[in-house]
Length: 297
Image (cartoon, rainbow, N blue to C red; front, side):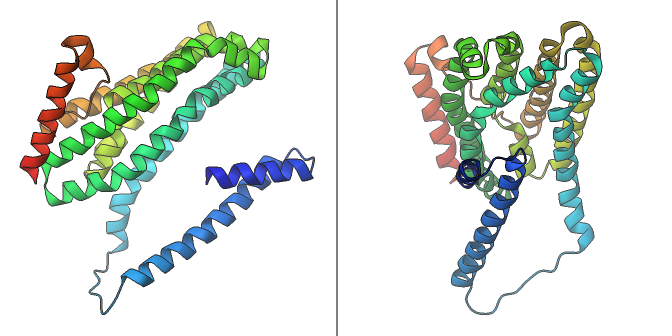
């Protein structure tokens, strides 16, 4: 999807001069990727399915029971992603702050390249292990996913924060350095996700999507309230700080629930073993996780 979108944008930009090129590029990309995905899915299933199949027909209401909470969760995330922008527009006289904030947000969210690559492969595995009742292996895979997130996303985010001013000023102009404080807060929010793990994916893949929906909705309400309180005084820095609080709330509540109901957390703070007892501690944790996996098998 990303490669196709980038290719289409480059081609359209070279051939045409139009401010709607991003919109056209998105539409063309979705058509290409959608058509290709449909073809690949049908071909793959046609090759794998042989003989007669016994199918179970699901009622529409049963489908909605599963999908509606996910829809509500995505809607709440949409609010979290755009409420701060709209409230900055409403509460601040300097509309340039919106552009600065959006640049800071998009730059720090480059880490999603690593995050999506890892979670897209881990999600179906977690669902499968939960369905089989393999709790020990579920714990092992969940913690390893978080560890991999930490070792890939954290160095990227730390580098982004350290070199934030040269990046903002060099890529977009000196006036964008004004968004550095907001940039740091947004980076901290993403670090929380990397350290505590993708709790949303874990809860959704283990049948707890209703709970996660309620957590995210509460976080969205909290985000709006904090934006209303902090944006008038602190501007885009206040909006970014509100983002940190809402992300921290989501992950802490979800982590507590996972601990109480599954008996473990998916948090795997990178380098914790090195800070505490040196390399031996990290190796001990590795051995314990492997032992849990073997017991599960």
